[in-house]
Structure formats: C-alpha cells, structure tokens
Length: 160
Image (cartoon, rainbow, N blue to C red; front, side, top):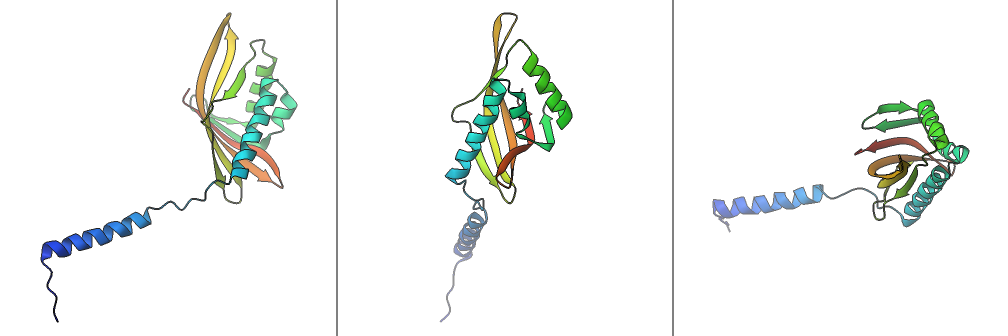
C-alpha cells in the first residue's frame, strides 16, 4: 500500500515536527533556586548591609573575598584595596549613607561548585547640603561559599 501526501501537507508536517524539536531544545536547563539558598543569600545581604548602615567597617570588610573585583559602570574595574579604602573613607563621612534593598527586586541563582549569584536593585540615601539625596541602582554580586563561609568575590554595580 502506497500513501501519497500532497507536498503542502508534507511540508506542514515537517514544519510542525521541526518546531516541536526546536521548542524542546529551547527548554531551560538551569537548576531551580532552592528556597534555602535564596534565604541564605537574603540573610547575607541583610548582614553585609546592616554593617554598611551602621558603619561597622571590620564586619563589612570581612564579608568580601581578598581577590574581590568590583566593576562599576561609571568607574570601571576597582581593585579590592581601593574598594576598601573608599568604604573606610565613606564610613568616616558625616553625610551618613544608608542602603535598602528594594522589595521584590532580589533574585538568587545557584552557581555550581562556587556559590550564588545575587541580583537586585538597592536604594541609597544620604543628606547633602541639608537635602536628602536618594538613588536607586542595580547590582549583581557573586557570593563564594568556602567551607560554609559566604563572601562576595565579584560585584557589578550599574545603572547609575
């Protein structure tokens, strides 16, 4: 028995078949973020910025890896020593700068055999010339987990 399909029907079947294969190839293969990881990074974010907001330099500094690389859209690559010098000077400034993570902006993604990626938007406030200055900025931080100790090894600060 011979089956004859018109060319248009055969073309349509081939198109549908290839479309299904294409959709399957585009499925996300990324692991879901475990709630425990999300909660841990949210806790670490809160810890580091509690130290920032209270100007506790030693606690703040201790949450960064020694090989930190900090990338800022309008400042380029800033090495660890310069980042720490800038924060130490900032903490001594009379115009106290505070940071708040904007609600609903936090994303956490696992980073296989390393730690986690934290993405979000934060708001900084300070008084300058008697006027409150407020700015919202985006960030991406890479948290490294070494033997249960979380430290930030990379920062990308942008949208200034």
